[in-house]
Image 1 (spheres, rainbow, N blue to C red):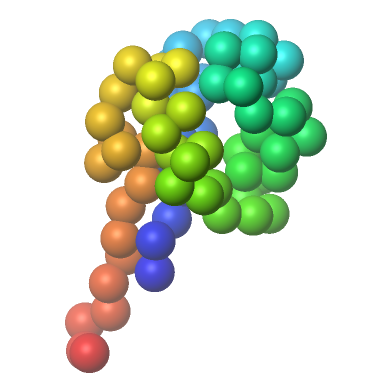
Image 2 (cartoon, helix red, strand yellow):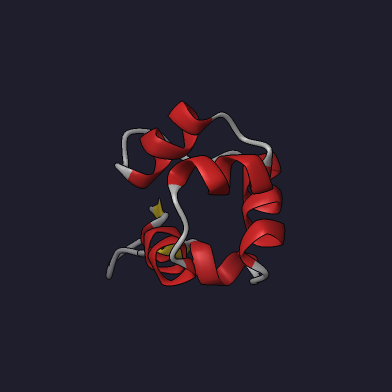
Length: 70
């Protein structure tokens, strides 16, 4: 399963408001809020915008939590 735990960490380290981040990333503030709260998963287009706004790599924002058995 892919999670966005890294996104929350990077967002809070950037020390900006959700509104400021929404403007920089060109993603609606309500959508940013839902992703931060874990209510929805980000799209690849949003992932690209978030990486640009936070100046980081996709692996900094998302991670795969695999199962021990496949």
